[in-house]
Each structure stands twice: as C-alpha cells, then as structure tokens.
Length: 130
Image (tube, rainbow, N blue to C red; front, top):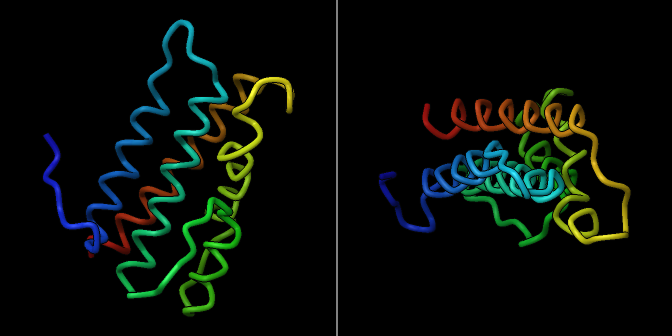
C-alpha cells in the first residue's frame, strides 16, 4: 500500500501520477488503448503538477500539458525535448477518449506514449524527491 500524504505535498501528487501510470500499463482484454492513454495523460499531468507544488507555484486545474510545462519553464527549470514530447498526451484528456471523434490509436503509438509518460515520472521523481 502506498503511503498517503496531504494534498499540498508534492509526494502525494507523484504517488497519484505513479498510480495512473500503473493503470495505463495494465493492458487487458476489452480495454481500449485510448483509455490507457488517458491514464498516461493523467500520470503526466499529475507529475507536472507535483513539480509545481514543490515550488509553490499556482497552476490551473487544466489538462493542457504544454501549458503546464510552460509554467515550469517560466520558473527557470529546464524542460528537455524528451519531456516536451509528453504534450502528445493532451488530447487523451478530452476528445480522443470519446468514441467516433478521433481514429483509434495504434498499438505502437500507445507504447511510445507509455514510454514518454515513464520518462516524465522519472524526471519528476528526480525533482520532487531530491
């Protein structure tokens, strides 16, 4: 069982990000890849917000990863191109997870997005836990 922290503790947001990533990696029969990518998006969003909480920076309760990364960059923290790739997950918070609005995701794309989310979690751990 994961230790819970208060909502203003960045470790709690990191825990939630890790939980979402675990769910995102849980492929099972009958589960849509788009739904798993939604969980990967949630993992990245919560991880970024953990960093913002660590530095006492207010943030919008929005799903736009690009916007959240811009706020981090405004603090002077470097955001690598690899981490910026996570912006590809933003659509999964909204339209991509609903039927008929976007084409189904390909398995190879799902794997790429999971890899990106993994990298964001590792980056966040380095910042939040050090």
